[in-house]
Amino acid sequence: MNPIVQRSGLSVVGLLVAGGCLAGTTVTAQAAAAATTPAGPVHTDRDGRAEQNGRADRRAERTVNIEYQAQPNFYYCGPAATRIALSAMGKALSQDEVAKKLGTTEAGTDSALDTTRVLNELTGGRYRTTEIPDPVARPAQVDRLRADVLAALDEGRPVVANVKGTAVDTDGHPQSYEGGHYLTLVGYRDGGGLIRIADPASPEGEYWMTLEKVANWIAERGYSS
Image (cartoon, rainbow, N blue to C red; front, side, top):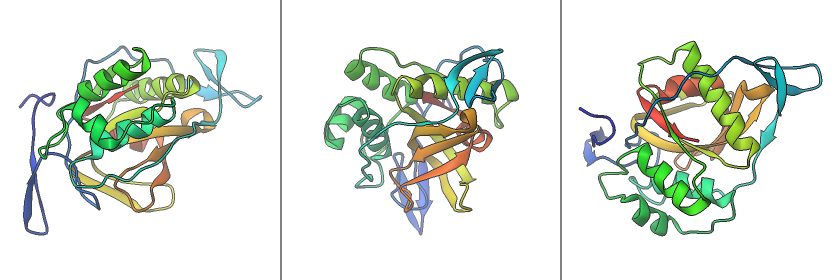
C-alpha cells in the first residue's frame, strides 16, 4: 500500500482505532514524501561548531523556543506536532485550526506531505518533505537527516517527523508508537548527534534521543524540514 495515502488501524487494549494517533504509549499516523540526495558527514570542530564537508558553518548545539501542547485525543498527533513547530515561528493557531488545514479526521493525518504543505502555507514555503524508505536508515540517510535538522533549526524552524515503532530516549524511557506517530524535533547537541524531541503524546513531553535512533524511528516514513 502506498505509504503516502495509507491509513491503518491499531488495536489498543482491545479497542480498534483507525488511523490517527492515540495519546499514551501507542499512537497511529501516516507519512511519506519525496526523497532527497544524501548529505555529507557532519562532525564538531574544536571551537564547538558542527562542520559539514570540511566547512564549519553550523553550531554544535541549538534548541528553539516552542509552546508545547499535548494532543487532546488519539488522532491529533499530526495537528499537535505541526502546531508545536508553528509556535516557534510565532504562529499561534489552535490544534483544531491546524487539524482543519491538515485534513485530519479520526482516521488520522494522511501524510508528511500534508504537514509540509501546511507549514509552507503558514510560514512562507521553506519546508520540504524527505522520505527514509528503507526498514533501517542507511548511513547516507542518517547524514541527510542530520544536515536537514541542523539547517532547519539553525533557521528557527522545527522539524515535524512521522515515526513508527519503539525507540528509547537518553533517559532510558521507551517511546512506543507501533502504529505510527507525528512529533517535533526542536533541538540538537553534539553537532546533531543528539536530537531534542517535543512529543505531544509522551508523558515526558520533551526528551533527547540519538540521531541514529531517530532516523531508524522515521524509517519507512518521512519528515518535514
